[in-house]
Length: 212
Image (cartoon, rainbow, N blue to C red; front, side, top):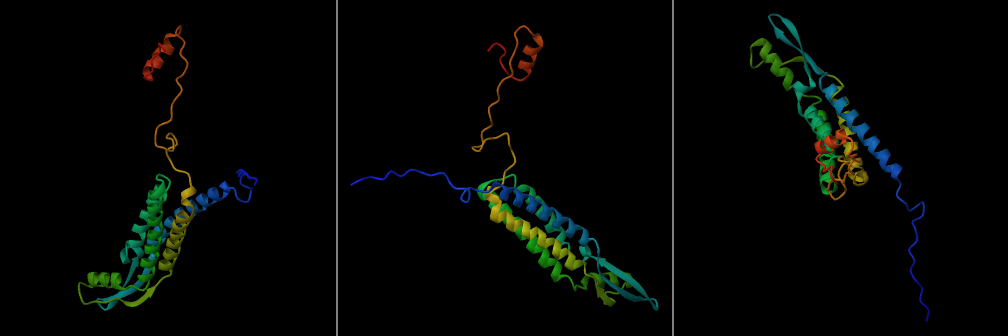
C-alpha cells in the first residue's frame, strides 16, 4: 500500500489576497468619511426653516439654521471624524469597535436630520422671544432641503463605517516604529570613528557607548 505525501502548494493568483483591494477600500472609506462629515457640518449651518411672527401690526421674518433646530447631526459628524482617524490607530477588536462607532455616528446623524426636517419648535421659540409672548407661534412656516442634504452627508459616514467593518481588519495601522508584537524596532548604532571627537560626542548624545 503506497503513501501519498501531502505537499503544500502555493496559493494560486485567484486565491492570493489582493492587497490592492485593501488600498482601494482605505482610500474610499477616508474619502467618504471626510466628505460626509464636511457635508454634515456645512449643511447644519444652513437655513432649515423660515417663517414670520406677528409684531406691532406687522410681521417679523424669522429663520433657523440646522444647529438651532438640532445640534445632533453636527455633533455626531465630529464623533465620526474622530472615529475615522482612530480606525487606523488601533487593531483587532478595538478597530472593530471603532468601526462600529463610525457607522453608528453616520446612522444617528442621518436619522436626526430627517426627524427634524419639519420641526417648528426652534422658530416658535424665536417667535416667542421676538414678540415677548410665550404663546406666540410662527406663521407662514416653510422648510428647506438642507436637512436632507445633511442626511445624505451622514449616509456617506455610514458607508465609511460599513467599509471599515467589512475590510478594516486588513488595513494598515499607525505606529510604524513598532513591530506587530508592540515592541520597538531595534536601531543599528551609527559607526563611531574614535579619531573623530565629534563622533564620540554624538554617540554620547544618542545614549550609546562609543567605546564599543
